[in-house]
Length: 150
Image 1 (cartoon, rainbow, N blue to C red):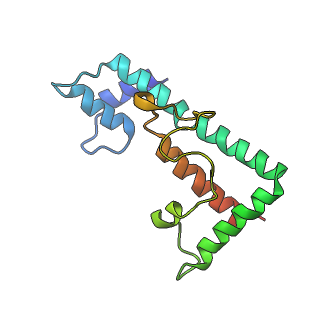
Image 2 (cartoon, rainbow, N blue to C red; image 1 turned 45 degrees about the vertical axis):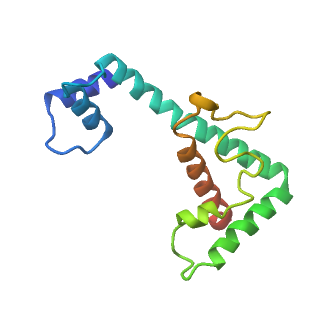
């Protein structure tokens, strides 16, 4: 399916890039690229899973544990409600500073690596480049969950 989509993009190129396929196609047409069509298709396939599967599994587990440990849910709600109370306007969305202020959210795991017992995003040169994005995505989901869901 990805190969067919890439072929369609090649046959009808756009002047401006609007999606990931457009950028991949531009890179494939670059004369000094190391990217081949096979590598590009493999990367696109992998991205579908690494950017979705791990985050959805982690959020599912977080919800399971919050259900099983109501004291953790209470503390999480308190942290996120305090964020909203500190805002000038409660309807504003989360800011980067608010995200960085979340001390309890995913507490116990170092933000830039792994603990001895848990290596969700790998470590060293094999550290996942999407780890920070996944952490932000999960924190934003939990913020919306504990402040908006009834």
